[in-house]
Length: 183
Image 1 (cartoon, rainbow, N blue to C red):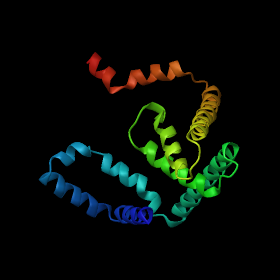
Image 2 (image 1 turned 135 degrees about the horizontal axis):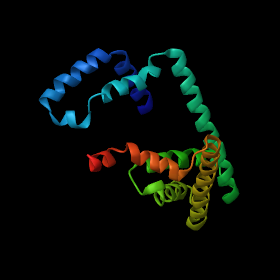
Image 3 (image 1 turned 180 degrees about the horizontal axis):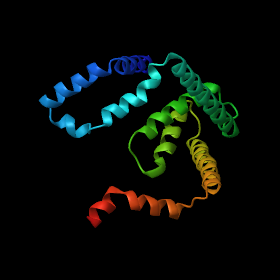
Image 4 (image 1 turned 60 degrees about the horizontal axis):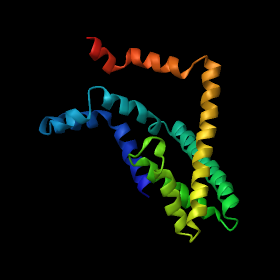
């Protein structure tokens, strides 16, 4: 329900950009702290990103792809859970993925190390499973995620002829902190 209300509000915002700009100007004059939160150009960038909510066909395609993505994730996690808990049901995977998504959305350690595992263990505890087996499933899920994304990233780097050191070197050339030091 909250997601639908949020999408509706974003849709209305995308449809009424001039009104939103006027509101921002009005409120940022009354509350100068707003100007610090939203720097010049960021509001336009937000509207640019929201354009998908105004184009009905494009929005439907994005929505269907998101549903497909979540469906694949649920199926994948369900298969992983069945390896550790043969009695696992599909609802276990759905609840655990939802809790994981909220858990890793909270600012935490790099790579959500620890937070992801605690989220999975907490969600699985609802079903009364053994905590050590839940930890093993959580560690396996996290390791699998690192392996899959790492392999895809390594392939992309190789295909594009990139290296981590080269990327870091390029980032340092354009980084604001490096231009401040030299200026």
